[in-house]
Length: 185
Image (cartoon, rainbow, N blue to C red; front, side, top):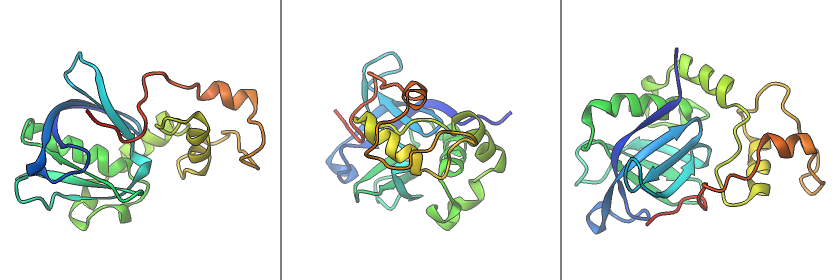
């Protein structure tokens, strides 16, 4: 059975800076669209993001990264990821990431073959109503409702300024352990 849950050690850039300016080993955990990273497997959450906030994923263009990926976010920021900490897991990470993207056009052509229909279906089935990973409950609702990955039968919001229904509010409670979008230590 396909699953869009993944975890393991990777290296990441510090706040989108060039690799040579700083990179950190982090324990990454992805559940559906949410990616969080921790100082260690049992340590404090150092940050996170939502895969739906990505504009494009490509093989890393940083000279210092031999095997990795660049995440380009819709706000123009980027995160560099290296698989050098866990090269045997790189294929699995790329498959989950490629399958989590809303469409293959958001992937570099060399990564499009990694997108698997079983993972895309599992994501829609298991995480279709997942709230947006963000600091603001209202922002999570707004993005969730405009996402292409809304579960069938999920409530819709006609006017974002109207009060949300109690049913919708219960379906996506504010999660205290979520960071403020793309954060870092």
